[in-house]
Length: 196
Image 1: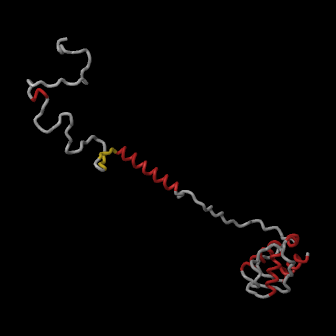
Image 2: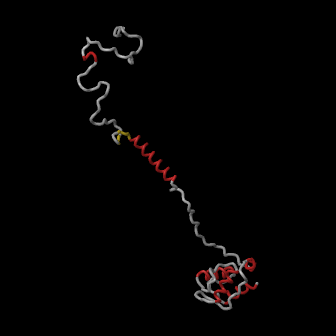
Image 3: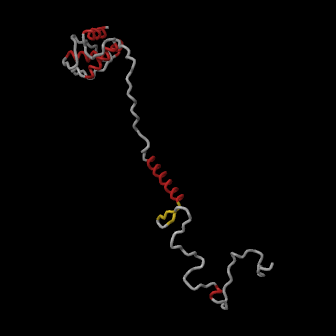
């Protein structure tokens, strides 16, 4: 036990209060220093220490790359949450269904459809008609097609594209050439469908 202090109380006295200096001790013995420096504060370096890690200084604070990544990730999550709350990622519009053309021809229209329809019984036109025609015979054609369950549009007496499309549907359903023109064969089928 040679190097040991005789005053050893048997425990570590690191945290014990230091003894008050006496008048007989000089300034150096009491722990007084000549300068403004405080002993317990480490001096600040003029240059940042290079620890081998990448650091960024933001607002006077040094941040490591990990801290910067955590802050950036938090900001991204916050931005996504704000956008989600604003409804940016949801859509009230539904996607338009794809347009498909039927490969199976529609079933022929019967007079039973005409009897269940609330429109009055229509009379078939008395002459052949083609696109571009106008007049009361076209109105009779349009009313006849409507009574049979086809949609020629408004019965306005003008043989336009919608009337032509309805005539073509009638022709397909009745085994005729679907050209959209009311020729003798189409006129006969139309009169037969309305009288039956």
